[in-house]
Image 1 (tube, rainbow, N blue to C red):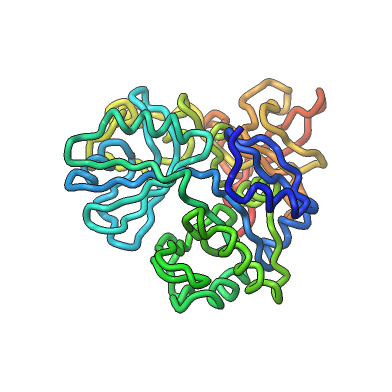
Image 2 (cartoon, helix red, strand yellow):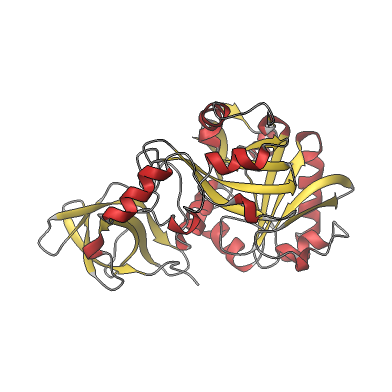
Length: 359
């Protein structure tokens, strides 16, 4: 197991450490519930330095990204971020990722921690002579400062007008006296905020300054437990749960980032599936009766016949009810459709719900 650079700090803060994506990661500091509400109502900070960062530079950088990713990166301008995924040749999902455009021939890819080595190996086979790939994952720390008080917190530390940053844009500037930090208006919580990319040599200083700046807003460190409930309330996919190498991206609801205006790895397979019609769909599910859905629980009809399986599930702290993601046949995917979740041989009534669960 790898350790993130500030591992010792999180241990000193009382974090419970668990294995996740090949790293020892803080899952909680106090309670998942308290940390969840801190982000929804105030400001919290996740140390997600386990995430991977690859630099893609050179005259062939855009053509390379167009080949390996499904979204159309040609629409990006400097300072814009794009959500996309890496398809495989069978039309599955190698990983989902963010694409940052620093300049005309200068991009950064941000990938999931558990897939760093896999993604690096996968994309490297498509590298051409006019492309330079650099894996800076080990040299880069990433802090997600999330919540309605995130802007007020970060603004204390920089001259960059962060309130003017639109969703899925970023800038580079000085923060807490450290130059060339990426401040990105992105996140995985639906609570608003910023993701801060900083060199590992400055990580401890920047972390400390963020907490000083957010003290008046009740800022707290937040673990992976609350990160999961926050992202699930928004219906955001988690790689390894809701999408994987065998997942159809169209069935997973990723059609909006699948652009057939260009050729990319697996595009012919994915296009054929679209033309033939989808068999199942990833949907949101709200429990009508008391119960907590968990991954791999069966989704059934009223007669208890299995029609699908939960891929992610939890008790929503905001809604105070069970919510889940799962795949069901297209014929059962309409919002309002009654389904059941099988919990320890008991059928719990539920219904298909529009996403996100929390608006």
